[in-house]
Image (cartoon, rainbow, N blue to C red; front, side, top):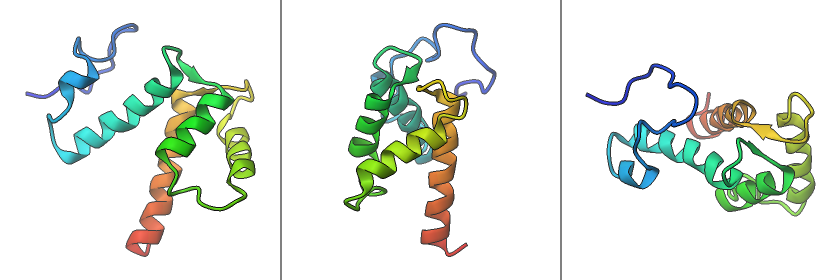
Length: 114
């Protein structure tokens, strides 16, 4: 059966497998979730948080269709401040996840007329 939904102990979070080993496995939704999680850690570059530069790079590389106006640079700075809930100048995975939830809400409203 698939991977357990139980939280893993601190340390290894991949069930012992590397992201490349998991590519192509599972449903479209499962692959999408791995892509969301993997994007965070790819831009965090071994850290557990994104600094402002890494966050802006993630936005421009991965969410360019969400940020398309000339004011995007300022919008990215404003978004960083909004997502950084504890004001520590870094984006934790939980803060990143809150951003993903908000983007999903925007997609739902714009694509599915809700």
